[in-house]
Length: 153
Image (cartoon, rainbow, N blue to C red; front, top):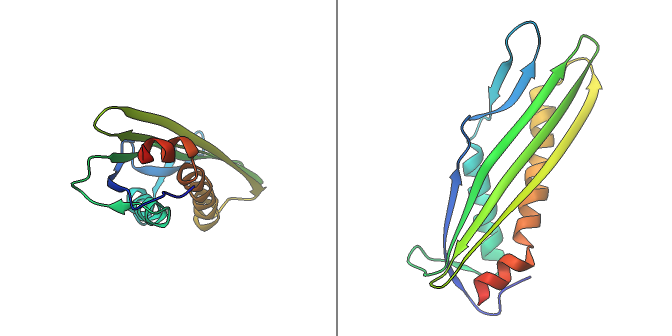
């Protein structure tokens, strides 16, 4: 869905997560090992949403009366690491909040990823799976008809 004209929106990407790591290796009885992303996830999402909104025909203008806020609410890959194999479950939740002079629109989007393999996973494999989930969910959000209808009214 694209806009009919160059609708101006103000844009914000916020990370509302309480923890900044993205992978947790459960290795009982030892304490879990926590791994953060090499680049803040908020920065990656900001670039994806900014490019996607521009591609959809929106003009990003900090002074615009229509505002869109993307909120990274949850992102975690939980890895259960056994001697011979591993299981990695990823959950991602992004909320969208849009406002104009009269109304507010909110919608939550979530997705899950799952990996299973022999031995221990390397971080690159996990990061690739997380990025696939991020791409899938951001595409779903950027193609959401309800969001575009709200912004174009």
